[in-house]
Length: 326
Image (cartoon, rainbow, N blue to C red; front, side):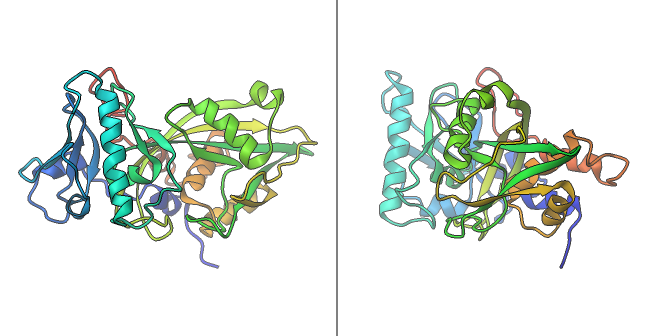
């Protein structure tokens, strides 16, 4: 069985080339001539789109495309300031619906209509989950690791994704995970995902779950995602962990999880190195190993590089109030 180093695992979840994508709309390289996606009255790029995507999108009159350097896709405010957020949301819904009707992109369907917030937007602007990668917009997700201590040894609940799932079927995952909808906070997302996926409810969860910060990285869609290949996906993952009581059993509560298994640290390390974890879940598990002193600078030669792969600067704004990027 082929095994990989932790660094090779990291290069799977954080696999967008280490280039300054913000400069690409101004260059002459046809292979990397990305377009900036701009919101009304905001010069900051909130996404980066590939040229073939721009050419294939059935644009409406709510967008202006500039093929001159720097290349841009400008969303217009059809309300002229009366209700910019509503105008933007309606325009995005309209063009995405048109793309779905025309089957413009692989993986575009009405079933995945969950709305995500455009991170860093000064207005409450939303986009459907399936369309975020098409526009190169950063997405927010939550992951929670659930573990218990048995006879002094740590064991971790690990689910296997259902073989019928659209993306990453039959791979191992975090105990709880999902996207953060536009109308909820990361904590709220974690609470409802814990119920939906792992049957974890009640005051024990709210009283004992621990927020452990956030991970940032940039991936490129491939065949495993079920979507078009080569799209930029900046990601922000809010991380939680829960030490479960001895009698807590995790059970699937929807059709996304096949089963839960209790694994020790050595088992999980072997599964990680055998490429059996979903990439984002691998990032969360490596972060957990670092936080708990399982992976350290003493036993991992690429320790600092690993940290860089889970805390990568993103090329889009993550704050509404200033110009800085993460």
